[in-house]
Length: 253
Image (cartoon, rainbow, N blue to C red; front, side, top):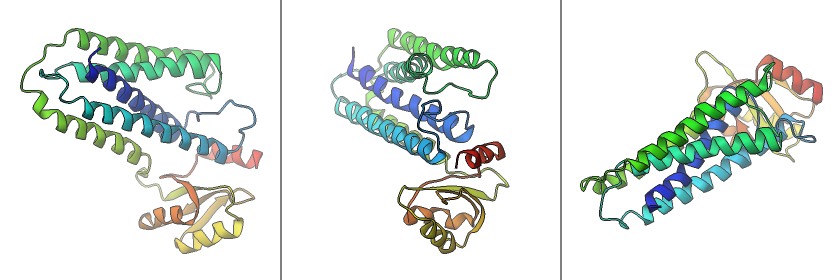
């Protein structure tokens, strides 16, 4: 296997994890990494493990970028379809592994937890984002026809992929239009008094909190949102939790 394909698969695997985590965990909020794991029954615990998951994906992505950079001159011919093919294979492999391991063997989450037929969602996701990219990537790799001028643009390709990876992570911080609320999850050890001081320091208005103020929903000027990270926050989201999720938090707090 060519180095560009091998390291492209590694990077594509990480991009698949980012796609899953950012879209399903944060934007759509259909599930968290450990939604069905007994003992992880607080939103703070769920968000914390989502954070560990994204940190792991960053490590894998950096390994893939490093490998691609190191192998940029290992072939005299251009990358052609090989690199995009490797990325698609890795993207598909992530969703195949996630489906088989997380959904069906370990049962730590499903694609859409509130669906009356979660298996249908699992299978659709498995086919659309697992098998289709994997087979498409394999086809691209097999049809690789290198051209001499493509290797010189490899640096731009790697930089573009890195920018897309960073942009996907940054997207989760973007508040929806006309949404004035922000959800803040504080790290363990941050007291209720510390959380209240953080709210005051950000010139924010408290809208809702759990009894320990580990999770709060505030109305805060957009330019002050990131101040919470300096006050012990694990996550500062772009929107408040849906009302159903807030009711669930109240029930377990």
